[in-house]
Each structure stands twice: as C-alpha cells, then as structure tokens.
Amino acid sequence: MSDAVGPVFAALADPTRRWMVEALLRDGTTTVPALAADLPISRQAVAKHLAALDGAGIVERAPKAGREVRYRLRGGALGPAATWMAEAEAAWDGRLERLKGAVEHGRATAGS
Image 1: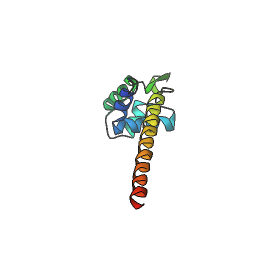
Image 2 (image 1 turned 30 degrees about the vertical axis):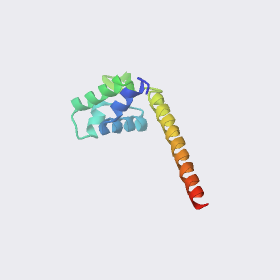
Image 3 (image 1 turned 120 degrees about the vertical axis):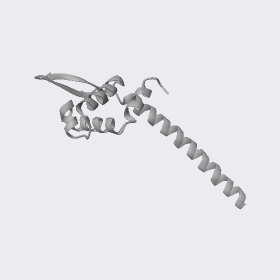
Image 4 (image 1 turned 90 degrees about the horizontal axis):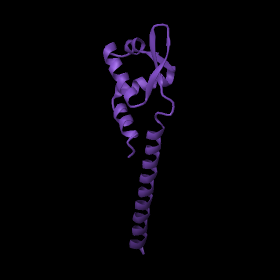
C-alpha cells in the first residue's frame, strides 16, 4: 500500500470525520461553527477533527469570508485511496473467479 493512502484511511476511519467529508461534498465549504451546530461535539472537537483531515491531505482552508475560517475538500485528495481500493477489488474479484472456476471444474470432474 502506498504511504499516501495510509493517512487517508486512518483519517476516514472515524465516523465523525466521514460525516464532515460528506458535509463538505454536499456544501462545498463550511466553518467550524456550522459543523458543530450539526454534531453533538464541541467546536474544539470539530477543529481537532478538521486538523486530522487536513493532516491527511483531505481538507484545506478556503479563502476567508470575513473573519470566518472556511474549509473545503482538497481536490484529488481521495484519488489515490480510491485507486488502491479499485485495484484491491479487482485482485479479489480475480481470486474469487479462479476459486469459482476451480470449484465448478471439481464438480464437473466428480460428476463424470
């Protein structure tokens, strides 16, 4: 596994962070107070989660709107993780197809 995808998977292992990513996908940009209003956690906890997502390269600070710090998804941040998952899925699909073929071949041979 590429070193680039480990931090992404680690950051997304937390359900609160996945919810934040979904909110950013839906809304484009958001603020700590806006996220905290929709979550049962403090603003400080939201800021820590955003820092973890930033550290993994998933989010970044957007240009300020007045005094508010806004966050947005970093373009292409999930691409390497998505590629890794697609490659892993293809490898498993190949293994399962070979296993299926071996089982079916074994049944055909046993039935002869």
